[in-house]
Length: 127
Image (tube, rainbow, N blue to C red):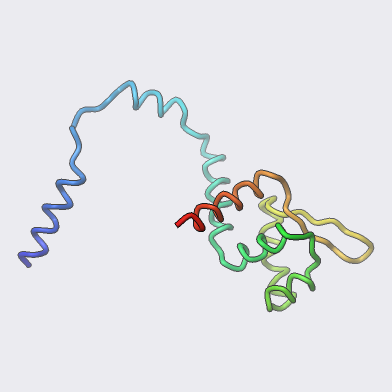
């Protein structure tokens, strides 16, 4: 119990603030606030990228445009499971589909997603 109280005091010290509102900083940041719609869409993209299967699919599509059966073979999953994840990624405009006859090929939708993915990969590889 004594150890718990001591840790609480240490935490309180590190979380302490000057208790003065820096109005110029607050006003500047408030003026730059994102619209709620953008906040929601961005959070959804990061949520989609938070799934390991979808990250593996994106990584595969960074390498090459692929159809569902090729993705299933690469990831060792069923076509149904891959299709489910592709639908989510497509709805978020993270990937796009190109049809050639009856076969659909998937690829990264635009360079923003590619940049985001590569930057995240660089970050985790940097350690």
